[in-house]
Length: 285
Image 1: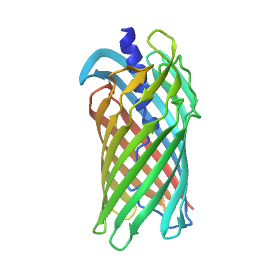
Image 2: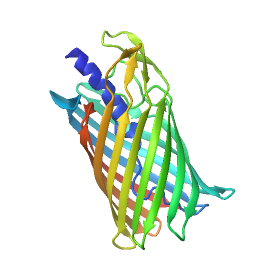
Image 3: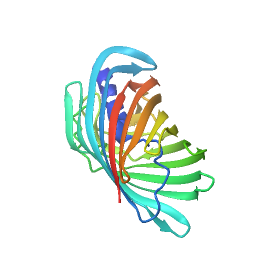
Image 4: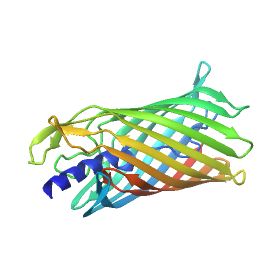
């Protein structure tokens, strides 16, 4: 049982939604340079079922997180390219079994570069590098933490195409790389070093505008989480995860948008099966 709980703690830390930030529908349709996009997110995630090698274990994880994210984005232009320097900062709390963490999560810096932004033909090709800094709350004795205590970088590319006046299809691929966490506890309670193989993922969003103010989207996410090792010992905890969801966006005013979304894991190999309810309130200046 002790070994199982130890494995669960790593899965929770690596797969909490705010630690693997995903896009929403139409995120890659840029505003014109000179505009500012200020977004506030609230995400409630929960999961009770723990899976090992594709099979559900007879244990309840009681994973719950309530996290707010602040995301200011500024659209500008360098040469022929639109770019959007931004940061993402999570704040909130998470609990797993009898462990709890609260406070500030890891700060992520990013900037999308639109190499192609063909408005006439509604075609987009963009690249986003994300860099996450170990600024969040971390305690090696906790089974769950808001911070990962390591640097990470995710490289992401997206192709988006509009169809007619109302529909958009966005396809994204990404790869995430990790520095070591030099302060984890092994199964015997000893300070150790954790490393992780790269993770890869993808997203698909098909959205349709029912009116000029309101759209809905069908969303799909895939993530292959790389295996971790602790002091050179493999944890055999790599994960292959398929997640499905829906989202709805509504323009409350010409400059204010409310986005709601729900997503849930449809299949996974290792880790906690998780569902997420989210809200995003965004202001355009």
